[in-house]
Image 1: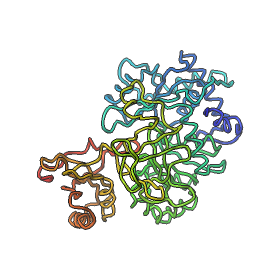
Image 2: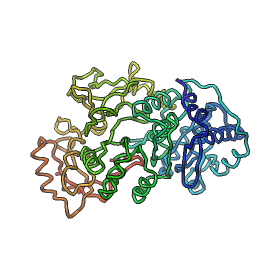
Image 3: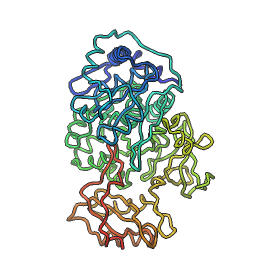
Image 4: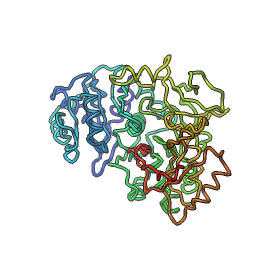
Length: 491
């Protein structure tokens, strides 16, 4: 499946229709088509050809979409980079990807390591404005690489997933169909476009359906009520941390927002069941949680029509096969924990220049996700965390999310994460890190509730209070950055 024909349904077929607003900018689909043609020609003028990598290190802005569509039309491979990354992360990614240049803004250019070509985004846009808007369209097929997107690297050096035109086409077409996108929708996108959640899901659902998009530079919870009231979106894609902040809005405001919102989608990190239920009560809207990865785009989702079950990521999407396997790679019975393996046109072509990592992650055409989960008899899948996050204490397996969900039900707890700490006797023991409202949190009561609900080996040896959990830009907790607990606390 090729990507451009799916996007042309709007770029060409809806050329006069209003497409995008960003600040004071207002663009039609025809404008986007012409701008990306000009950008494609400007890249060619700078010597960029098919298969060359070009990186962007940018906050959300229309020029990111210009670059994306130009790459779709020319066979160029884009390398999006998280704007929160700094010297160590940037040096690794740019040395590994070897892009022709990094397109960035003046305020971010100083973070780029020496020796890397830097192209100012405004200068590139000015050059593009001088080029012809006539259509550019290199022949590309499903196997043509389109993006080199690096994993978050929460447990080590990030790897570049080679994502193809076919990956993005299959993913976008499925989501636009399953989530019932139409021209009448209004999509509020506050997600960063350097990540697949914003780029592969939001952008392609928008372009394939011909709906309207409001793009913001970033999510700002202080402006959320104003944005929702002014734009009145019918669809909002977010990460759990965003939905936690939206719970702070006054009930009348939340109820009004819920009246316009036909679809709220959460992903990129596990959504606590407690947040799911509080959002339903406050907004009158039931969040649709789904599960995907950089390497695979979307795999599983709760249904649009049917039960959106709190704490689960739902059912395999139409284009994806999922099985849950033991350590030997044999499928396990429903109700039994194992690793999720996936197969389908959404799965990337492999890791850039990492044949070892590619060989380790693929077996007989199946991609080993590294995520642990369990499938219910009716097919709903519940994630239990990363395989690398599994805590083995005295020979017993402990799934941190099970403990985290119970802690989050305790009054005064805003966020919680459980990690394994070394223990001389048991190998590892669980320790809970919590962000709390100090006056409302009763640690003794929380510990007592956990003792009544969970086996003794699952009890956290300590509750460590922190002001905030270290997270990636998409809300995933960076456990390696958590402070060590006091030594006495884990004895």
